[in-house]
View 1 (cartoon, rainbow, N blue to C red):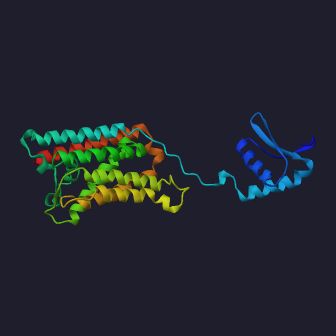
View 2: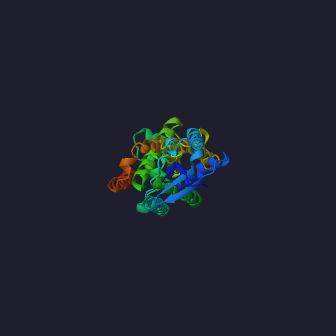
View 3: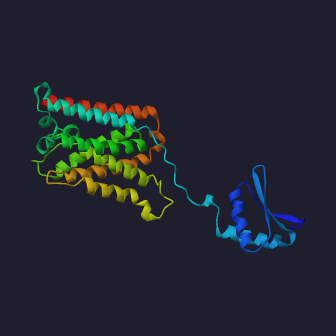
Length: 294
């Protein structure tokens, strides 16, 4: 290459220079790339400078800079461990007390969803029922899925706020399901909370637009995936309360959507701790009322 060289492109990115070098190579334009401290440049013989400049401008027009391509917001993961530990401890503690008929009371009767009594104002049953189970198999299933979905919900929204949202969403699901069914409806189990956690995950990821750079089909992935898991794990035999599962997912999804608007606030540790204490207060108050009435 002759000594009369002209700079036709310069960038701080070696990759950008390499891309344009390929363009010039394809056009049969002799050139070379030189690297300096923090900068790279493409040089061509003076006789080819105009043509090289045209080729590079054409390439740039057809390939806009990455900065013009919308990028998804970054996910900031939070500490999910306190929430899942609290869930495990609460469910196991209530299971142990109920199994021993602590204080001489039938905990399942005192805390279950009861269509007649909830209509009479015993709202706390929508919460206490979330901590009760029929047997070891029922308990184990809800523990496994609750820990799994609750872990991710806590990673997205933080332990305290995620579980406060889950408990409230599950309580609303139990209440709505009870009002829609016959007053003789009875139910226990953490399934509504488990699917509220799944719904929270789906709503948070979808509304948070963490996949907005993808095609619309992929952006619906969190919703489709959540519904698929709901269908796979939330339906079963005649004893499965499908209505509570579906409503838990719906209310949890709504909670996840709301939390995406509050992301700047829910990252505060003090708010997370306050929300966690509120969950404990709700559970304690609900069970205190249930046992006193029993």
